[in-house]
Length: 578
Ligand code: HC1
Ligand code: SF4
Figure 1: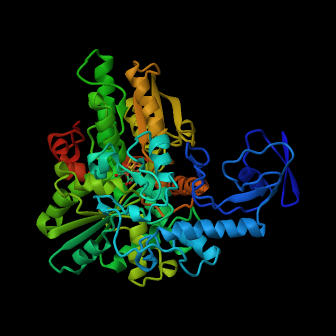
Figure 2: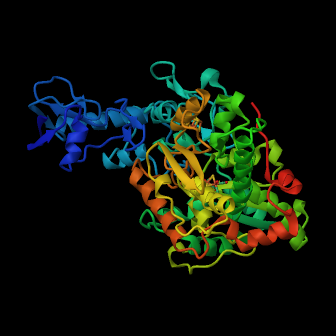
Figure 3: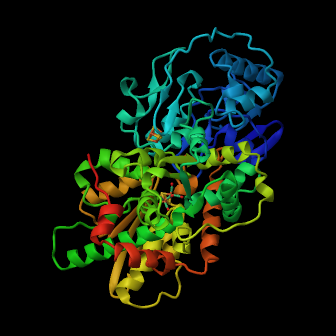
């Protein structure tokens, strides 16, 4: 234990604590810009590059960055002396000297850490402004992400996220001095690197250097076109976060208001990705049972464990990083793509609209879903994928008073869903949904208690064994790609845990923590509250097992026959490539 005095307050801290940690203990708020700690994940960025958190330490000549200076016994610290305040101002002015001044039209306006600091410190003029008539770096616009390195302040949060949490390593600091920024190898567009499009770099970027590829106007163009039937689907995790954009507490469920808002925006059919999540369980669950049966009878043509395949950043990750293990993931398409395929076949035929006259828009908590929708093998089953943030912006542009909307239902039939589908949006939820169905299919018994507590939780890697009749089903769960890598390395070493199935979600927390969700400002508790909201929605649903979704069963009867049928394979399954 160490003693430290901050602004006259004596504090006892543990060895290893920083001045910032100590100050937090007693509620002293030292401003930070580059620092970020997503507690419970591997994300801690303490590069001490912005110098906004500097403080005075008695006996030291130079100011010290609070985020990266460990406490020593007897330390005396002052956090807001005139010298400290002047220094913070100067640092901000220097950062702004090398930063574009297009705040008015910047995508990050209102959510920008640099802007917040400039406001807090009352910066009124750009004393050292360099001439920004010309951009220094070309803007790179990808399918999911736009990189504008003129706006990079070298905080390195994206690099920490990409390298340490996701273990992807697509981004790193290049050059020295003024020309430095965080870039890709040889300046390649993200699509041509190992980037998975997870969007977690966007989620933690404090400025407008990394933002989504906004497609709001494309959606408006479709809605304005009288020749188009425009269908919208909403992912499970969106309903647990959208309310935050309208001032609601994190964890507020807005399912009904969201449906009402989409209807007022002019979508012809307001449907639910949850319907397709139930279909995914029908397909993936059947595939799991099929593989287990085959492996147990000595058939070596299939592999265990089955890896879930609904998270597009995870798909990109295993395609690039584990290209020799592509027979492990389920061949089922993701719910987003299953929905698109069903909308443009089964539903299109039902309402007698040719697919060319139909536009499918998805609202996703994710940026990789834009990339997924754009993959050539999916043939534009989904035309446009907007993030939760983009939907919030669209609702605001349309002058809809979200908070006073009534609660409305989704349309039928592709709006009907079960509790199992709702929990797809949190880590552990996809596999819990699959187990609910697999249990009943394998044992033929009714599953009384549908909650599997052993699969829930927030640890990065979780392992559980679920008894399904005589079978001991061994399950692995990872969220965050670095954690997924640990499980993949285990598989390479011979599957010592004898896993039958593994669920992976690329983002910390699963989709509730997706790269397209309202910015959580570095507070991982926000993500956990969204998760709790999804579990609450599941608990309140009258039907909680995917194979009991009546609209799904009707569709199989009318159209696909049965899961894994020829037609199901054609429309609902995919293949992977290195
Ligand atoms: Fe997800 Fe999924 S849960 S991937 O996290 O399987 O994005 O929410 O839509 O497709 O259903 C995201 C969420 C989402 C798919 C489903
Ligand atoms: Fe890295 Fe994900 Fe950002 Fe790609 S999208 S650069 S993988 S953090």
